[in-house]
Image 1 (cartoon, one colour):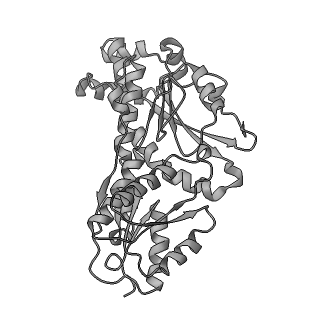
Image 2 (cartoon, rainbow, N blue to C red; image 1 turned 180 degrees about the horizontal axis):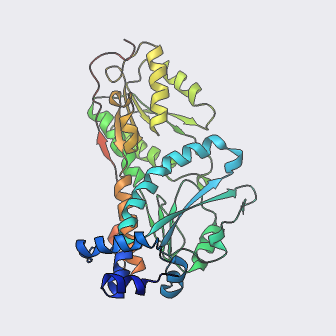
Image 3 (tube, rainbow, N blue to C red; image 1 turned 120 degrees about the vertical axis):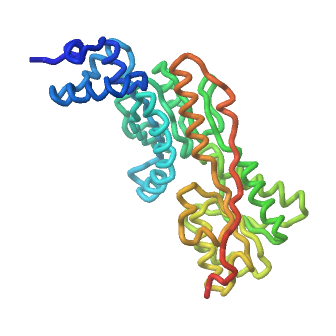
Length: 350
């Protein structure tokens, strides 16, 4: 015998509306009623037919998390880093959407930047199967991606992206302000000979906006304070060579690193030269919350990215859009905060 929700309602002595609210996880269902329904559902091994529900409600209760990669199969190391970097956003988004009854569907999209074509097209581009889309920005987004998303006619938001075609909302970090805060921290510590260790930006079209913007913020503060800035750009091949070169500069007393991985590399090179952090050289970088747990983290100052706040604002915006109302204040750019070093006053090479 096929069990229906009407039958479950009759067995529990409640209305079909109550049963519907129960399966949606509504807090309006009393504990005693929920316990009774739990027992009936378990006894009859009943599961709601989500396909039938979607046809009736025109809602899939699914939100796509779109991650754009560039030549994923050709650059496995980059893919590994990208996945770790974006995992935190995904975890927070999942936690924010779950109480509203929405599940996340991860949709990685691989784009060949030489041909500007998709290496493979995800199924949800071919048929509508999600209620909304959140894009997680890790690099350049080709125009065709925006066009395909727009054609689906569902609410969309890009996280960690600082520009998009008209009508596509986005939420981003104010990376110029972040760069300024890092440099201002070093100046406040009395550092006057500062080095930038980051990316070499040859074509801003294809890079993430944080690469040029963080450096620009550092440059502004150095100019305002009459401090000369030495810039070392990393093209993903010479980071170790650049770190070794910086460790040879005897007058350097402050280093701004594009990311936490750079800090660890330069700290190792300084250690080899017998220089201590932060007594001899202050290092400041940008981190995600999980990176603060690293054993070397106390030796550096960090600018903590507001990734949790960004994911919360993004999920709130999408949930509003699904109800045909949005609050543009949720899209204001966010800045990080400085977390000073908490190192014991000993040399790193002890």
